[in-house]
Amino acid sequence: MENLNVIEKTDEKNFYRAVWRWHFYAGLFVVPFMVILAITGIIYLFKPQLDVLMYRNLIFVEVGQTAFAPADQMKTVETTYPNAKILKFRPNWEAERSSEFDILTADKRDLKIFVNPYTNQVLGELDNKNNLQYYAFEIHGKLMAGRFGEWLIELAVCWGLVLLVSGVYLWFPRGNSRFWGVLMPRLNLRSKRLFWRDLHAVVGFYGVLIVAFMIFTGLPWTDFWGKNVLRSRESYPLANREKPKSIVPMSSLNTSGEKTIPWAVEEMPLSNSDTSHLNHEHHEKADLTAENSSSNSTKPLNLTQILEIAKANNAPADSIIALPQTMDGIYAVTAFPNDPANQTTLHIDQYSGAILTDVRWKDYKLLPKTVETGIALHEGKYFGLANQFLMLFAALVVLILAISGIAMWWSRRPKKRLGAPPMPENFPLWKTAVFIIGVLGILFPFVGISLVCVLLFDYLVLRRIPKLKKVIG
Image (cartoon, rainbow, N blue to C red; front, side):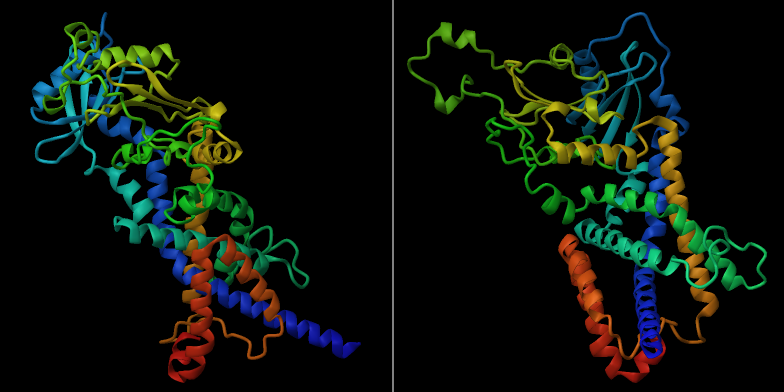
């Protein structure tokens, strides 16, 4: 019986060392990305406050008696920026705010133009691809490296879950300690390594749930997992309705450096305006009478008319209107407010003003409702300033864990060696490890593939190259 207890303790010790090694590997890869995500996340988290601080003279105006019609404001922008394409319009949803137009100039500049709705004067412009929020957003989601950057971020975020799971196992109290170093850090330690260890373990314990929540609510935006796993059955949220014939998704309307389209409808195809009444030079019909030709207007509705239609259909005041760019294009009205229950998506025929698509919160299934609520919380929008501070706490936890983890490694790192925890020679709990890897591999394919690669490196390469094994561990 005594020998059995010794074997069990040895097995547990070996498993602990194996988990520690995997925790080290995960941290080695994840920490740089987590620091980047935390810092850029904090910047974007306080975007509303930073925008006001940096662009107050563009955002706010003196309230006047009457406002110019949106169509008149658009003409002013067209006059100021000749040959530019007007892409989007956002009305002054609060009396003291300016109107906003997103345009693409003739020299391919992506600009946001601010217009005083009471004087119909252009207040200034903001380069959508050259400002603090744009860089924070692009680095946070893509490392400014396109799709490859998205994959790296997704891989790092998924490995962050490996860090959390292994970290909880390593934190779990062993021996006589149940308070100091477990629930409270020992701050008066002479040993810097133990100080950093306590800080890492205790902060990790109190922050594990909020960090896990932050990771899971960020995954829907990822390129592979978000698109292929979560959206597999949610490409169109309306049941028993015909999909639009277009193959252009709503995500194509997202603004540079900012998400303006709700996640739930990003994969939904854009509708098309009815162009059957239009007269084309090479498609004139011999039997077309003057009466018929005059009954169908070839002139699109203007921005003022579209805004009135949107208001009549209860679109939120801060909705963004994407303008049609082709003959069969539509006006796409979208609202991505702080409360996801007020999300609205309208497709309006540019000629007749008919509502072609109308998607609201009630049309979402359970999955998109859950995801949208998570996204609102993740971005600190759902319940105001308190939500922002909650996610700030999560970001600070990530930074503390990263800094303390690096400090722990640096204090124990052997000279001229990486200092990875040694892998047990005989590892009897391999079935448990394989099971964990299998589950992670199924839920998060990027993690599964990378885990197999690391295992092969650990068992097939390191064991056969003594010098490399010495350097690493």
